[in-house]
Length: 375
Figure (cartoon, rainbow, N blue to C red):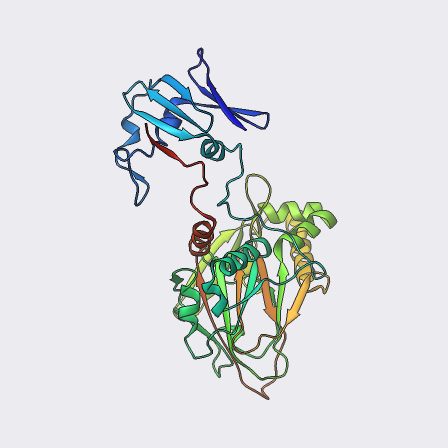
């Protein structure tokens, strides 16, 4: 049950749910009014500049009816807030539209999230696939179209495509004059794509059109799991990899891309934000020898974990399979393949915004308590 009361001394509205209480200041509440004259309800953008609200804004009156609270402000505005909606906004209750938290996995614990392409038209199937993608860091679409460039339609179902110097789409097949090792039959160890960009691509698609060659299995490893293993087994090396600014570079006759970042990037809570493991493209600075010794140890261990059968899964994509993976978390590679059959994949990138928006839309923008309306 959610309740509220006005503190006559501070002027804050105290909101309580489940034994937890938070103080809500007048300006914080006033800015959340969704009254028609305050907010465009098509875009949910304010129709006024909140920076011009009085700094000394006060709550003049509070009337609670059990499911909501009507507040009168000192600037003359009056509106009603749903109490459960306020609890979500204030962090006292879970947001039903929040993106699912990642769940670390190893080869023994993961079940690849999958769905058929046609079934994605069903909202429940799309919602379930996206939930699996966010928790596991990858998903596999089955029975997609197998015409060349059909990945454009597949990827755009989830969000706008991010073009790079590799093009809107890139072809993964052997080339006589390969501009990247991906365009050879060599094995590719587990890696992140394009860590040399200031904003590395967020989500990668690999769409299988043909895969008749011997070998060429796809490999995946969870960056969260291998970073945790490194922290457990070599905490000093882990600490260096979270702090040392490494230069990632890609150069060709027409391209010179560079970015500097730690190999293991953590957020303010110490959780993995991104892992950049691409041992053919990283160049640490000329740091103290002791620091570099720990860096090289940490990188060596990470690379070994990513290839360890305990952490890595392998599978062969069939024509019509499309692998969707979080490039900031999931490390991917492939086994070597022979030239005894055709192997042709196409790839592209999108940003996080598209899938996250899709998930929130399917989860629902508001719960039954409603938001904040004019009183």
